[in-house]
Image 1: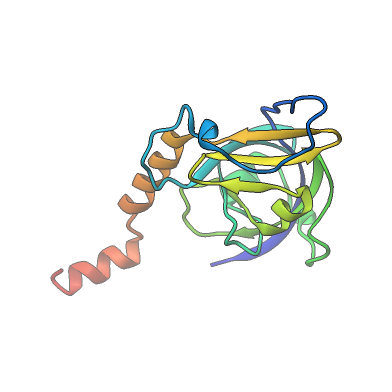
Image 2 (image 1 turned 135 degrees about the vertical axis):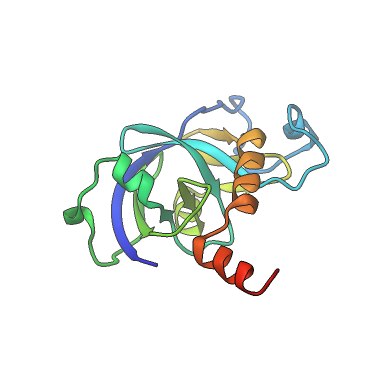
Length: 175
């Protein structure tokens, strides 16, 4: 496994304005579940604008202490080795933020994982149950809506993926 760091700019998509005169609340209600398939245990998978491109299959992961990018996205953004640097401060800004990624050369059905550093910098709250992420921006609350179909496709791809070494070891053991 190879791990490196690179930086790219990201901006969210699909904003939704809060009602004027109401204090900003970063919370969820049953109304936020409208349009989702319930019950479910899907990951929150969204599309984000990264490096000027709409990047699909981005997992929002509150449990991740890092923002992770996989080689396909690294190459797709036309990043070069000179874009890799030693670790520095993770994020700055609000709606458009500079993001440090760890580039991890392993299989993943996701193109990237946005973790706590990004969420905390945005002041964001995410909910896998509601399949949404909300964050303050000036006098409004913006939201990013998840894609349950993409989340389920990623899960299937992860389950079906069998690295060569594991396949060989399983065959050798008669399993």
